[in-house]
Image 1 (cartoon, rainbow, N blue to C red):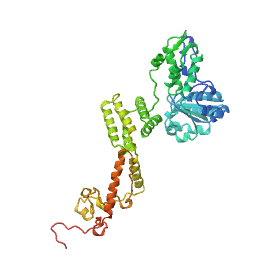
Image 2 (cartoon, rainbow, N blue to C red):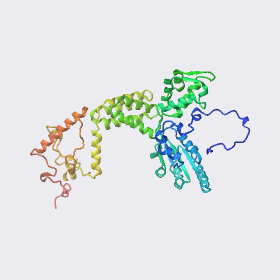
Image 3 (cartoon, helix red, strand yellow):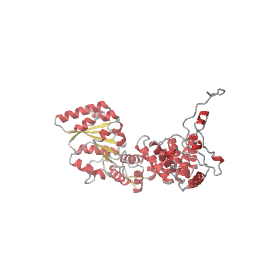
Amino acid sequence: MRDLFDNEDDSGDRSRHPAARPAPLAERMRPRSLDEIVGQEELLGPGAPLRGAIDRDQVASMILWGPPGSGKTTLARLIADLTRSRFVSYSAVLAGIREIKDIMAAAQRSAAAGGARTFLFVDEIHRFNRAQQDAFLPHVERGTIVLIGATTENPSFSINAALLSRCAVHVLRALSDNDLLVLLRRALGDDRGLGAERLRIADADLRLVAERSSGDARRALNNLEAVALAAGPGGEERTLTRAGIEQAMQRAALLYDKTGEEHFNLISALHKSLRNSDADASLYWLVRMIESGEDPLYLARRMIRFASEDVGNADPMALQVALAARDAFESLGLPEGALALAQAALYLAAAPKSNSVTLAYGRVLDDLKQGLSDPVPLALRNASTGLMKDLGYGRGYRYAHDEAAGTAALDCLPERLRGRRYFEARPVGEEKELGERLRRAAEARARAEAGPTRPQEGGATGRPVTSVPPRRPPGRAAT
């Protein structure tokens, strides 16, 4: 079984070359059987559909979706080893459309000659554009190849719908700390790994290595190897200390992609934590995104939106706090400006919540979508010209400041929407008083409406004026 990018030249005197450096620990410790894979029981446990398909050599085209270090490449290699197939490994990062055509031609020749099926493993398949992904379609449909694509991105967004419909999607989960501990202990005791190094490490310290690896098996093993190398050369028993671990690992790397699904997952977590008034969670997600490289001004804009969407008039100061945090960050930048964003996040989390502004806006949108966009009532129109005044513009308007109650018996909505209520104040925070003021204003209008002197829009008849006689130019007699 040869990788597409294997070196074809095996000739020559190898003694002239220095001894190759050993492969990284994560590569040396790749599972050699399905039973050695840790943490994917839903896919590979007893009775799982994918495990059964592999055991029966009935594997169909699939997409393996999971975070880095969850075992996608390892699983693909084991499928190749355990099925009677010709296996070709291919990286979307390193190759292009020409290589795809060459592989498909070779697969067709193999199938025509009655040879083994071709299993094509495409790592980082989401990096292919639409045209490149379309190149796989006819070959997957005809069964010329069995495609195994690996991706860290949500296939719903990154894989063409036509190709996705022809592939099963198998989701690999990030490994738990306990799963990583199994792999780390295996590496410490196996001669393929660090078994000959005579290393000792306390369980709590080994767990620290797992916790700093964010569910990534490759990262966990690489971290362990870095700690072992920092402890000095082998030959005698060595103890890996907490201080050595801290120094070798420095800090856990943060999985993040500003344009991928993880970006949306994290901002969703921040928004929902703020909405749920969980200050600690809100601060965690905010700092995590900043430290992962997210644009802090994007986070500031999201908090400004949150202040209107989820706090609203329950605490009108929330919008001012969010705007001030954005301005402070623009003045200070990183790292100092991040504290202003943290301050705003904590304020928003603690603020009383109301989505009444969001709901009111949505109700208006719903009416507009139904075609309820009638003309402005005449009483509300400014009569800027004599013609407009003759047409009834402004007739019947009552100036609210002249009314004892501060509001007049005046219909401000189009006739078909009279009485429509869009905004419903919630009895929380400042919005409770806002709702009371609006209620009192509505009652005052109702009382004025019931009075005998209500002005009418269209003059004495109450009907809007639809036409007027021609205006006579000044100084000219009527004829």
